[in-house]
Length: 89
Image (tube, helix red, strand yellow):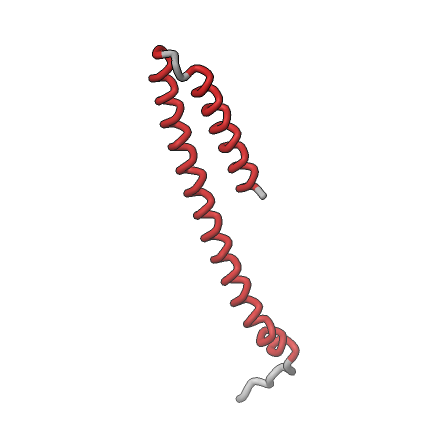
């Protein structure tokens, strides 16, 4: 859900930049400013994509860890329920 909100924010920002570019595209004085803004938006988009990939990787790692914990849970319960052994000697 967090990533979706972030992507929507980037999409809105890009939409505003596109509308502004179309509305003022003929003005030569704004070309450099729009190039700077577009560059910053591209950089932000790359960061969002990287964050999304990192989050997906972390999610997969967490799921694997949960699977491993689930796999050993039964054995732990058996050991806890087993009668205590009397020490030798």
